[in-house]
Amino acid sequence: MHAISRAEVELKRGMMKKFILLLGLVLSIGLSNTNAGAINPDNQNNNSIGIIDEDFQQNTLTTKVFPNPVTTNKFHVSSQKNIGTIRLSNILGQQTEINSLKKNPGLIEVTLKNRKQGIYLVTIIFEDKSKEVKRIIVN
Image (tube, rainbow, N blue to C red; front, side):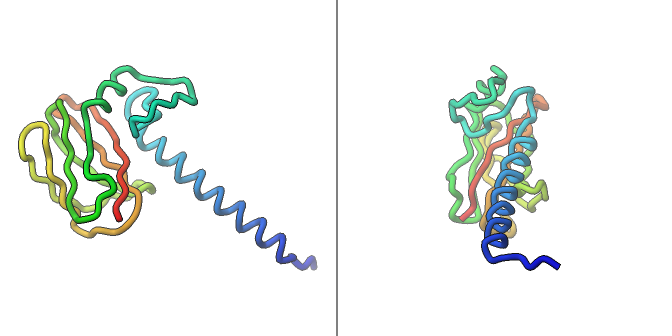
């Protein structure tokens, strides 16, 4: 039987960490891809894949989630479009319980029921049935 050296263990551990980070990124992009080509939910202007959906770009310019990072159990979602529903999930896609209070058609206050640190995806479903996904960090 072959004994595994310490160097091999460290190499495998490092590869596993990289794999987990890559998997999280792939899941994040896959879950946020609600419109064709909607690769970049963070308003960053890097088009490394070469796909941009003009409707998606326009929506992200008018929809904001704040504060980000979230340091209390509340955050707000504002948009020039009328917001219908808000959903919150972790990067694995598991839904997180929230309460939402509509301040007006374009502003919702969201309260986290069980605030746990991590990266979350906020799915905003507008009254016209279009969707947008934003990423937030909860500290």
